[in-house]
Image 1 (cartoon, rainbow, N blue to C red):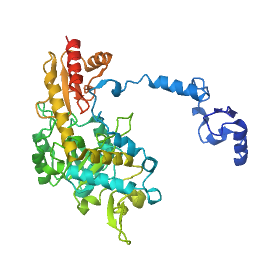
Image 2: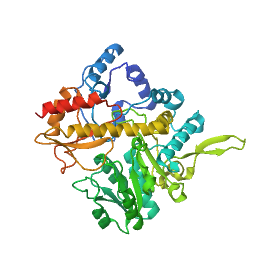
Image 3: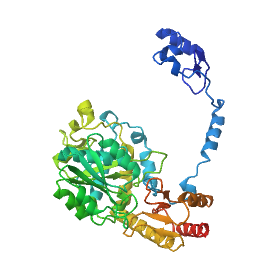
Image 4: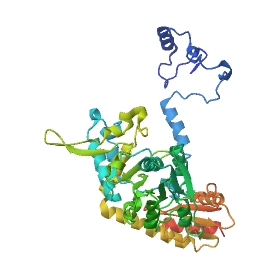
Length: 462
């Protein structure tokens, strides 16, 4: 540790041996560590001793200490989990972990030629399979996550139309809404569209009243954050297009084996998160955003992210590389449309492995299996006194559950004592949905898992 010129060596801190530090200071002409912090006013410098535990110099002791801390976590792998809300417990085929762990993929930074050992081709194949799933022509190398993809897609719509307003459903994902507003400010305004109190879907009368000559895009989630399937896509598309706006649709790729893709009801740009496609749940990671559109130059030129294509070489072979490189911040730098740095390319590769493993039939089976499970659970929960399923339309994977006379926090605490993660509490973000939780059912859920939840809730609410 280092403080006010005092040195203490530490086995895990490079160059912490006092004699080594003194030699380094002499080499650069500094009298002590404090010389490097002269620019910081003295009155705001911390001069006390940090209250930190004693160092554990033994590697074995440190390992034991960290494992003891980690053992306090409650993993979804060791419990029954009905949590969703943007990060879902889908099954990950062994091929995904095996291939994304290969050194040529795991350690590659940006996939440039000096390090490319098939990465360009792998991402091209990912883009191609995503395009087939979405029934669109162009798909990007993944952004950081689906919310960033949504923000970027709406900014693209603003540049394409030359307009400054985006209409977004008020019951959109709260986290996604925050990121969208951050991405659009100050160039574009976000206007929320009121939700129908019965269906929880967007109120189309309110949409018609708010769409206008300054509307760049109408944005919908399908399935919505609360799980509802938007069955009026063509009508919403018509409302947007008649006003000269674009339709941007956020779609869960795990639903596209059973639901019509956004292009089927007039979406100009599709976006979403690829976490359901073979990527495990992580603490803040394991996310990647896709953006898709037609192969129209006015759309393609507005993508800030990398696009990989295939072209013949001068030697009669085929090569994989960047399409329209001049679009990106790598070329435009400070004059570019949007900065693009390290992307979630590894998760794009993983999603490509997942799609290749599943195939069209597998994606259809995935979506169908999820829907059957979700409808079974919703039906069983609705039979419990004091429990009701909110919304009255079709849904996919997730649905809101309202409790009567008890808070979600109390219910979830009681469920956790029984080894069950309850639904995501919607109450803090949606005042109009008090005592309501969002329950998620993936293909990993068995009938006995769902029956265990029903039994536990029946007992807790008795």
